[in-house]
Amino acid sequence: MEERLVRNSAERLQRQFAGTFNTETIERYIHDSQTQLTSQATVSRWLPVLIERVTRDRLRAVMRLDGIADTKPAVLFLCVHNAGRSQIAAGWMRHLAGDLIDVFSGGSMPAADSNQGVVDTMAAVGIDISTEYPKPWTDDVVRAADVIVSMGCGEACPIVPGTQYLDWDIPSPTGGPADALAEVRDDIRTRVEALIASLGVLR
Image 1: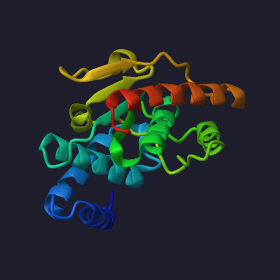
Image 2: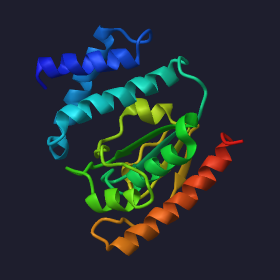
Image 3: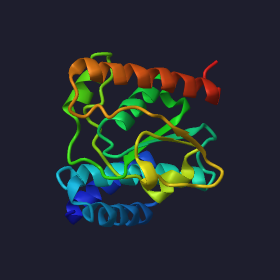
Image 4: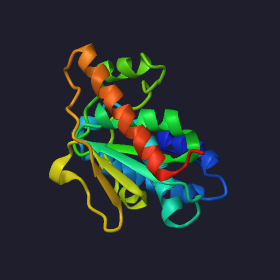
């Protein structure tokens, strides 16, 4: 990642995290995220965007771990490619809970690109996830999560003592027809609604 892009990302993140992280800390996280992501060839297409987004997620997680952020629940959705089920779940939770829950997602083997069928099926219910791209999870985010929802990442899913784990047995929507995608989408909505209710954030 060119230094110019690093500086641009650092400036955007500095505006978001003003008063919490200085530029040096943000740039250090950017470079560390770049090192992690460049080791995974599948994410190279959107690398500059992914580096900034992974860094943003990590900084949000660090704020929680350091007790700087508020105490709202944090949920991490995991699947293999972070292009289907976990993106659908994260999209639903952001839509239904707004900013009452910190939402993260990731994959054990992130896909090289978004799943257009998944983007389309969410757009059909008025939810835009077209700017989301597959990304791996990081240790910071895993440790910051109150609830980790696994949807097929198997033995690769991280284990953190004291964290609530949910295993949702949902078929992968990859390559399926539109009606099958819609069934998966609606199934995930029902589960997300139940999870939000269990967290007690909506009154």
